[in-house]
Image (cartoon, rainbow, N blue to C red; front, side, top):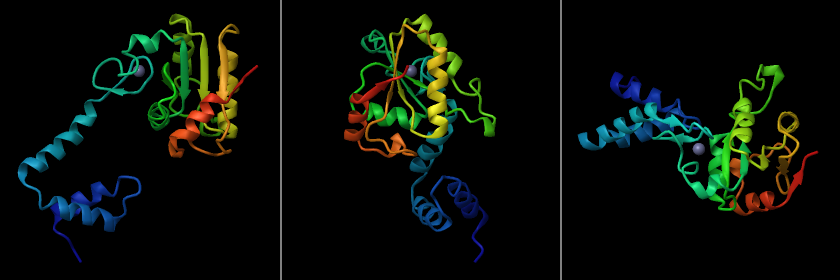
Length: 198
Ligand SMILES: [Zn+2]
């Protein structure tokens, strides 16, 4: 059946969210239709505000300011340890495991020559610069195990001065596995059991 255009438009927007099919979208929009004006405008505003989110100038995580919550803490910056992750979701997964007390660096993916993703499409040059200027002593590569992930780790190791310790987490994470979907205990075990790259 044909839905009123207003309803149809809202459902179409909702189905753009990964994992939301048309049926689910319709059900959610029908619920939202019963909300009063204040609730509706709060939802609308919350979405529009997302367009104003900044990325932390250091690690790349989302923030409303210039630096994220983690990078703002002196105790964490002073630690000298940087945990390199692929995505924002991996950052959140590790941070929620409560095991790592240094700062992070989000790459935005892994090297993939076939897709044209080289070091400059990722935040690798920024990482190298940071290591030097902030005098970091240790890098923990929390990059997911895959052929591309392995190549990315080798490339980063090459770019980093030899005096910086470079380690990679691995234990407990299966090939092709993804940090985002692992429980906190597995993540903290993986962080404890890291292997030095040389
Ligand atoms: Zn940050």
